[in-house]
Length: 356
Image 1 (tube, rainbow, N blue to C red):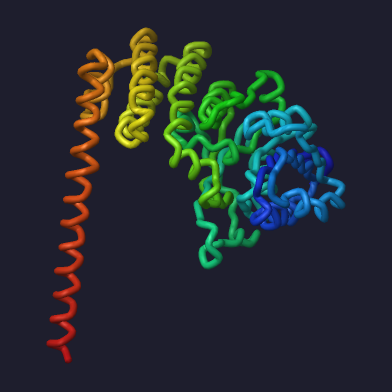
Image 2: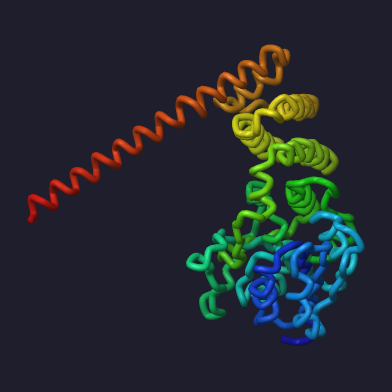
């Protein structure tokens, strides 16, 4: 591969309180079969010993180390990495995750062959217990099979780390993460997809996403207040679709927003329920103002009803639905499942005794 065919790839790694996982992450990056890397590590004032874990890695000349003066949060830390990047391509790796040893080479080969501006690749989740930690595939396990992507891109999971991006796209369009919000990947994903025309997808699961008790997504699911950010960012995505005049994407976005709003109204902590309902009403109003077609199913009809009637009706009605779901339906379903399991187990025992 010539110098022209070996473009510099910038990998942005935000670091915050990941001392337990940082070795695995950085080793999976350092050991890439593709070596022309710029590894930008931005440390966001960790309170554990992440800094100490980082020290031996700083001997690698490919690593640029930046320490924030104060804790800025994930979005601002990633944005700082973008501002410092100099590569032809750019990608993100969260510092508690692991990437396949051939991920970068596979993406560079695909980009070289297809002239893609954006390559999205598969991912798999694993927990942080020792017996479930998976190691990256060997290079021989990977094949360069890619698919040209159209609007199906917008149905993919909104993870920024699942993208290999031509850096000029971010520079020219000034795509950045919204600062001060959780679920910041959503607007970034949509803005990127709206800006880029030449998109490809690699179905191989080359990014291993660690699910543990201190991960952003795990913490967010335990704190309903953080879910309120997601409702706010929905308005930003609606505005992006309008700005790019992509009316054909309204149906895709509408279905995602309705499903998201429906399930979060059912599961958000009760103390945030009134605020969540108010935000959903704003989102639904924005969709109607922008001529989004109504999707007709039980979720959309429920959300539509909740957003059209006054709060003194919608809030008690929503709380009643939640009581039925959590106090009656789910316990009953669990009881039935356990009963079937018990009956199946009993039948297996009877068969065993008869065989004996």
